[in-house]
Amino acid sequence: MFSLLRLKRIKQQGVVVFCMLCMSVGANASPIVRIDGSSTVYPIIEAAAEDFQIAKRGSVRVTVGISGTGGGFKKFCRGELDVVNASRPITELEMEACRKAGVQYIEMPIAIDALTVVINPRNSWSKTMTVEELKQFWEPAAQGKINNWDQVNSAWPDKKIKLFGPGADSGTFEYFTEAIVGRAKSSRGDFTASEDDNVLVQGVASDMYALGFFGFAYYIENKNKINAVAIDSGNGGVIPSVETVENGSYQPLSRPVFVYVNAESRARPEIQDFIKFFMDHAAELVTEVKYFPLSSAVYKKNLDNFINNIVGTVFQGESEVGIDIEEAMKKEARL
Image (cartoon, rainbow, N blue to C red):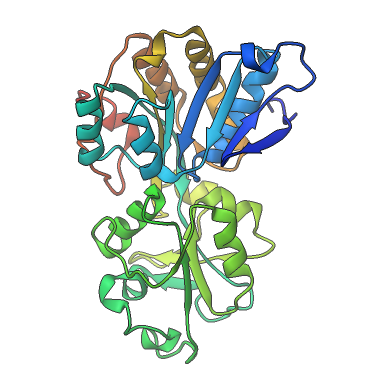
């Protein structure tokens, strides 16, 4: 296991700054790696940032913000970040924004996340849900019409459902709506939304009739407070786990997550050191924070692309449900 020592966290204007307070290097003199974006990817980058700074003995600072995938890309395409965390591939609109600003990027898939649907532990009726049932709750047509559990399944209670999910800037929200509803960002609007997954956890944990979704790591970290729903996509209910993600049976909610590196930042020694450190230890770090690592070949390909400045995306500006990452990375990247 890689170092579990974690650095002191200081919150400044919504950005978490990791710093080695005990080191003699002045904070103002230290080069900075600027990262922002997905709350789903945040635990991985938090671990990488902390252990990297330990390895560098405080000579480099890493700042990690949480503004959601969409919010992160807005900053990234304005040239404000070195790295953006993303819980889905860059979109056509974001690609165009980066083109207009002259921002090029190196795409790196870093892990698989099992997007997890969760319920309150006192919920005894919906331990398994079909994709169609989830769609009936979340599709735009449900707003103002589907308010109670029994309106979707008559065996469920005649009680008001309270829905929790990531906000519209979240890549998790985009992927969930595409996989479940059939179109990204196509959702009812009358649910409790937050870019802070801990807010969603607390919402579901405190309401017997709640239903929510977020990344697997937040479920695992809070599994004493919430339960995962088994997802039935046609072959019976499947709970997210190492086994069901690896054998491909947890569908359609298994998806890759990414970082994108600003190609201009690539020339800086601290960025080179951070990316090499991250890719060398990615499998350990991803496993440590309870996501699912990709193959060593993918991490090597990421590092090769970084070293050789292979810019662009292989995903054509769209998320693809059930994608094979190794096959996808054989495609030619485009900006």
